[in-house]
Image (cartoon, rainbow, N blue to C red; front, side, top):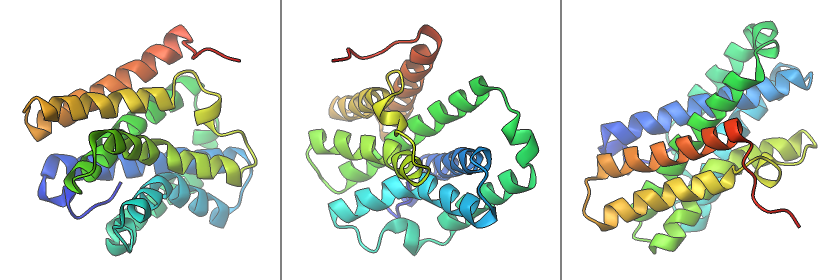
Length: 208
């Protein structure tokens, strides 16, 4: 999610933008499938792309939230929503698998960006992992609530868990003095690989 702190590192700035765009596409696609109008699609794109980061920023005291201080992020989210609106027939007929991979990529990108921002605010590593996970799953949870659906974080095969693992790998790498960029790459790959493995192998956490 957006942050002026991450802007100092071009790699993480690109990660931030990429995650925003991917989640905007995902949220807008869900809205199009649900039959929402243009405004509804744009709202879902914004909520999915930026909701988790806004909650995180409020919790860590970075207010106003960075996504509201930098116009590029809402503009990118609305652009993703507009693309889906204009090409909604194509997005509605996409196979499920590409959408899941898209979601896994966005999940990894946001887990990395959220954890990095928490570390920049000198939060405890455990809290940094929590903030990274919140950034990754918060927007999708808000979108699901708006669509009257059970959030994916509560029903998907190893979803939030993948974000936790990715965030934890990043924190561990930083603790062992690995560079910031390589730590981000390691955390992102860990999250993405675990999520994709869960999709392919239908991995689940234990149920009650």
